[in-house]
Image (cartoon, rainbow, N blue to C red; front, side, top):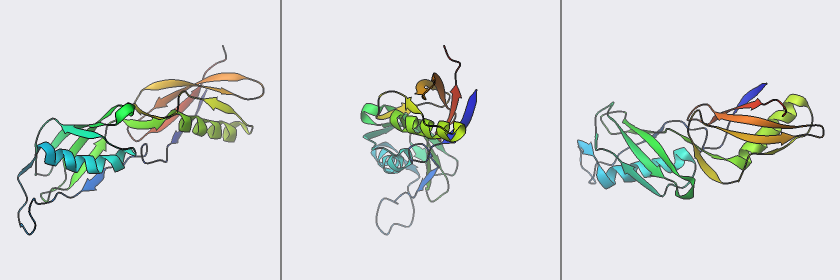
Length: 179
């Protein structure tokens, strides 16, 4: 039985494109650079990525320079310490150099997922539940990845398959048959 999916509310999982403006490089300079690369690109992306992902970003590396031309896209990787790494799609939005930084994975905390699952089961079945989804702490999860939680009430114990359905962190819960 599939129980309704839940959209996570914390910034790490309800990610929207984050727009940042690029500095022109020198105060008072009327034109912006034609490309942004190396440490400058990584610094711009790192500043935006932390807010977009919802956890501290330790480092950013980008695979190519970015032309300051609407539609130019590159991929960067944000290092998140023990949580892992997240690929970022970085796109130039306009000739002024506004960037869209879109994480391609989501950072979850299994303890928070367990709380969401308990609340969802309680609202659906009108009784209290306990849930365990594993060790707490931030973890990078790709869209379409699944993991299993255990849920129980006074009468039964069930496994619940959790699927991350998109990079925004939408979760689908499927209560599995008793074994």
